[in-house]
Image 1: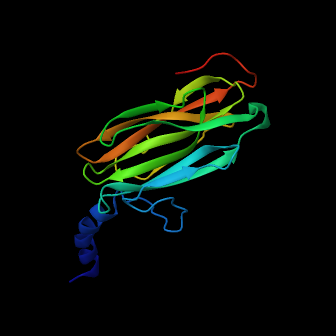
Image 2: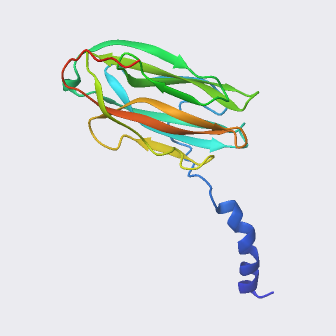
Image 3: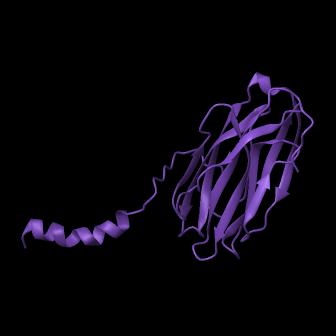
Length: 193
């Protein structure tokens, strides 16, 4: 058989396998393995600035996760308290913004094989009496279900305050819209709830 014809015949067989494959990097500092719970916290005085995840249908329709933190700027004031905020239920949509004007400084999650989903909870930290302003939501992360997801703070001076998630019961995956805000460099009395 002509090698060129063999290649043309084989291309359609190879294309579906290659299309849409995520860029899985084995050496990435993942905080969990598939179907495993995790508890990640930034160092004292740091806030979350980047989130990356990789999805696998074969591994229980689950994701492995990695996070990056950076020290908060001096103008944000003193770190006054940290706490675990509200928790979602696996298989449900969820919106969570750190209470008491907190910033996200950690994440914990537990996998539930019965629904092929996770429960989530944010670790929030408050700095002096600073207040959020100029808040926005990111686009969906990942853009499409079951793809690799990555979110990096788009601009200096923004902080992650929470997230809104949607869950697909068919695809058994979540999309996230992260809530990003600037914070005042002075104390104020306003407090979100």
